[in-house]
Image (cartoon, rainbow, N blue to C red; front, side, top):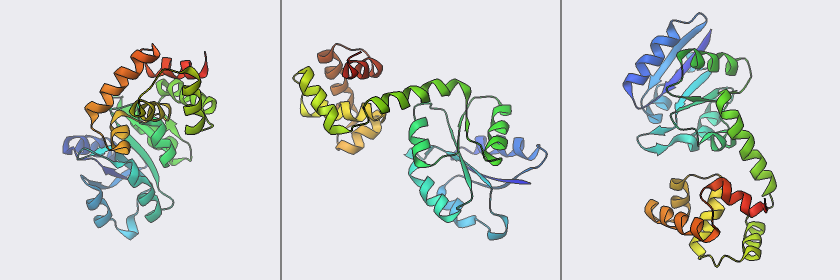
Length: 217
């Protein structure tokens, strides 16, 4: 029996997932909570989950940072991130997620994600594989780190503002605008402003074009 815990701040989502899981042979929803605090508080040592379905945004906060804490408490648990956003895929994998399920996908895919992950695999929806591979390629080509990216920017000589360089470093490392804002202690609107000015100076229209410019493609 695969024991599953759900952590999601939307009670409707919890009810839908719980109903679906309990209809499956060999699966049981052992715990369903709207907060991480509730999850940690109500864990029962004799009914520990094999799989945790973790919503990526609990009460508007990024829950990816909690993967380490969950696995520290439950070393053998597998964590499947559930979200409506594809852009956190790489960060989720780096943080230790074992699966990535996009909300809005079919219920069959959620069950597939649980079965694949429970059997020791890693579940990523097929339409996200291309995105993941592209990120790996970009990181490999720019793997030398911030110093080399800054050196490359100096070579290209776009007369960039310090903030624009910080924005580029964040984009190259596949951080979201919100994460870039938090890391540099600036507002989300400031990030958007410098992204626009950076793209204009470098004559690009997207992050992909920016990375190609840095690589000299």
